[in-house]
Image (cartoon, rainbow, N blue to C red; front, top):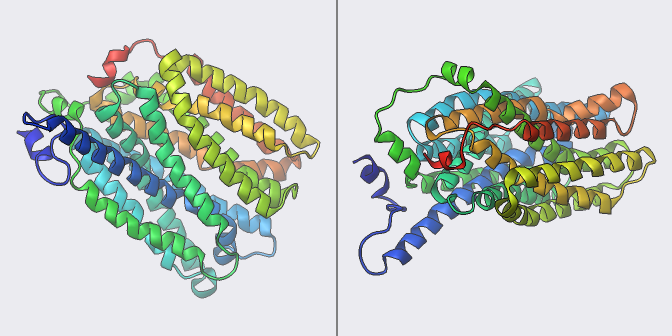
Amino acid sequence: MLSKNLSSEGLFPSISTPQYPFASGLALTQNTSVFLVSLFGNTLAHFEYIIYGFLAPILAIHFFPNEDSTISLIKAFSVIAAGSFARPLGALVFGYLGDIQGRSITLKYTMIGIAIPTFIIGVLPSYEFWGVKAVIALIICRMLQGIFIAAESDGVRIYVFEHFGHKHPCLISAFISCSAYVGMTFASLVASQVSLEGSSWRWAFLGSGICGFTIYFLRSHMPETPPFLRLQQKIEKETSLRNILKSRRANLIRTIMICGAVGGVYHFNFMFQCTYLSKVLNLISADIASQMSFYLFCLYVFTLPLAGWAADRWGYVKVGKIGGSITFSLAIVNIFLIMDGIVSFPMVVFITLSMAFYVAPAYLFLTQQYDVKIRFRCFCIGHAIGSMLFSGTNPVVCLYLWQVTGLSFAPFVYCLFLITLGMIAFIWRAKDHAYNAWFL
C-alpha cells in the first residue's frame, strides 16, 4: 500500500515496469525523468550555495566595507564558514527525516529551504543602507543555506544511488558529483560576468531562487526509492542516534575525514586558490584567475565520469588511493613552484585531473559502510561535520595561515594536509560490510 501511495500518482509513476505493450519504454522515460530532475535540482542547489563564494570579493565591498581589502575579503569568507557551521544542525534534522519519512520528501523540503534564503540575499540592502542589520541578515541567510544543503547534496546522492546504482555504482556516483560541479561551474561563469560596481550581482541570487521554486514543485511528485520502501515493509526497531554514534564511531570518523578532505581540497583548488593568487599574491591578473577557475571546473567535470568508470572497472579503493597519491605528489611540486613565485597552469591542470580519480570513488567508499535504515543520517552527519571542520572554513584558515606566517605557500601546505587526511581514511578501510549490503 505504501509503495502505491507514494509512486502511483503525479509526474513520476511507479519505477517498476508495468505489464502491457511498450512498458519498458515507458519505464525508461519515467526513470529518465526521475534521474534528470534529481540531478538538475542538485545542480541548482549547488549553484545557489556556491555562488556566494565566487562573488565574495564583490559582496565584501557591499556588506563589509573596509580600507583594507584583505580584511573585507576575510569577513566575506567568514560568512561561508558560518554556513558550514550550520550544516550539522541540518544533517541532524533532515538526516533523521530522510531515514524515517523517506528520501523524496526530504529532498522536496531541502530545495525550498535553499531557494528562499538565496532569493532574500538578492533583495537584501547593503551595509550602506542597513548597516549591521544587513550583515546579520546575510549571515542568517547563509546559515539557512548551510542547514538545507547539508541534506540536499547527500540526499540526492543516496536517492539516485538507491534507484540506479546497482550496475555501475561509481559511475553513477560520479554523475551525481558532476551535477553538483556543473552548478558550481555555472556559478563560476556567472560570477566572471558580474561587475564590481552596480547591482548586477543580485540577479544571480534572484534568478536561481526563482528556479528553486520550480524544482520544488517537480520534486513533490518524485517516487520513493525501492530500498526505502522495502525497509518500510519490515517491522524493525528504530535505531537511535546514540546507538549509531556508539556502534558506527569508526565509520563516522572515516566519513568526516574523507568528506572534509574532498570538500576542503575542492574549495582550495576551485574557489580560494585563484582569488589568492590574484588578489593576495598578485601573481596573476583577476581576469586570468577567473578564466583559470572556469577552465579547471570544466576539465574536472568532464574527467569525473571517466574516473567513475575506472573505479568500477579496477576497484574504487585502488583508484582512490592512486588518485590521492598522485594528487599528493603533484601538490608538493606545486608548493616549490609557488615558493619561487611561479604559477604553472599545466601543473594545476594535472592536479585537477588526479583529483577526479581521488574524488570519484570517495563517496561510494563511504556509502557502502551504512545500511538503508541509517544511511541518510550517518552520511549527512559525517559530511556536515567534515565540511564544517575542513571545507567551508578552508578560505579563512588559508588566509589566516598566510597572515600569521607571512609565507606565500602556507595555504598550499594546508591543502597538502587535507589530501593526507583523506588518504589516511582510504587506507583505514572498513572490512565489516560486504558489497551486497549496499542495497539491503
